[in-house]
Length: 167
Image (cartoon, rainbow, N blue to C red):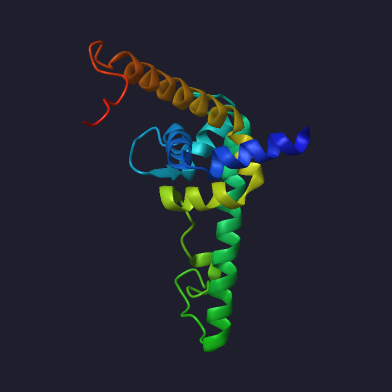
């Protein structure tokens, strides 16, 4: 049943192990271990049309779309603030308006916290990382299973299994 699959994915993405899965997905796209997913790295992967370190084209495309949307939102906020204040920017050497939104810097990185927010709210991002999420959860399941087995095997053989009756 399709609904069961969706429910299971929701439990994986938003359940008790969500930090494990999101960290694994984030690390996949942070090859420099700087703590950010950097837009230029994604653009290089897109341009080269290669998949490096298990980062798929769908992951790159989805993350670049998020960067684009964040930039549009930032530009809209800046434009509203700019219009609200009624200020005109100063003219630069090229005659351009230095206060215009186009002069703003671009969003060039995505923090782990931002990534987690998008994983929680963006189905396309979850879809892009689904294979990786499922692989991570399989590893978590195997580790948990081994821990349970080790605990079961470490029970002392001479330990009493029943509680003695009181006198």
